[in-house]
Image (cartoon, rainbow, N blue to C red):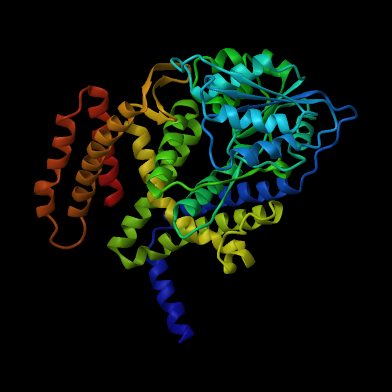
Length: 472
């Protein structure tokens, strides 16, 4: 029996070109390196400064979410040895977050905390960026720490991030947020998998996560961060771009990783990923292009496996590498973040490595995300829509309804172009599929006929060709 299985495996492997296995190996090794570096970063202990500089914690808030009160209390409970102040920025005086913030701040009179209102509308930059800028103007600390309002930090969060700036080559220290998976839906697990896939790459690629980051005020000013943010939607990718331009590094501080909960639907989760990927295309083409190529190779392997059993080892290798890397990440994160899997089923609480089984969910999610980033006319974010024409050019900001409708229309045309390419590629499969080519171009022509500009038509044609190539 064992000899028969070995012989069958050898026959299957013989049908796969050696070049494909080299490609798979070339993709898997960097992923394993990134996860290994992430695990070593979790164990790294930053040297403590002789004198702790003064710090200002700036938190933009909008809306009174269910976890807002607990998150703010966790921020105010920092055990930072030096002087620290807290500045909470809200968009206008009537935002629901204002009363909650003022009540929690009043409960801690020993803390230097203030709530500032930013009445300016986000016309040429993101709404979150406006809150960050308002907080930075009111801050008086030597170090500026920025945090989102939907995360729960540890008592030593501030101290660890400040210690991460001890190396003079480091311009910004950060710690990405992990999402607590719970419930029966796939949305929370998909978000954990999506973020777990990208977090290990942030420091090696000199990028960072804006959910939780710190920078010296002098570097904030010398790098021109405020000026760049004033015409930007992305705070973190813009800061990372400025760091790279100045030849400075970013430092991932694993010991300060905050957590957050996510109760959104699967559609909302995919919409969130779409927005992130569209912003990535504008603000960091390196990471976006690498992810696009990787996603295309994965789906090409899936198409080959669907055409011939001999390509199954190729597909199994790619899926196995993805599950191994994600499982390794989740196991390392669970040891570093107590309670990360408390809401998960008992088996996963005992063996967090099994969370890597969620990796195949990323294949269709990434395909949708990168396709959306190619054709999205605008992104919808927290009640506003933003048309991005470049890293420092936000053409317009209006109500979110316009972006939602534009997204729905673009999604229909995107699906039609991709369907055309897939059907045409299927026509070349073994068997009598030639008749499929007779109707393959109909959805593409419908999508292009309804396209208002030449740029959009070119993108639809490119997507059609890419889908057809992968399907073949």
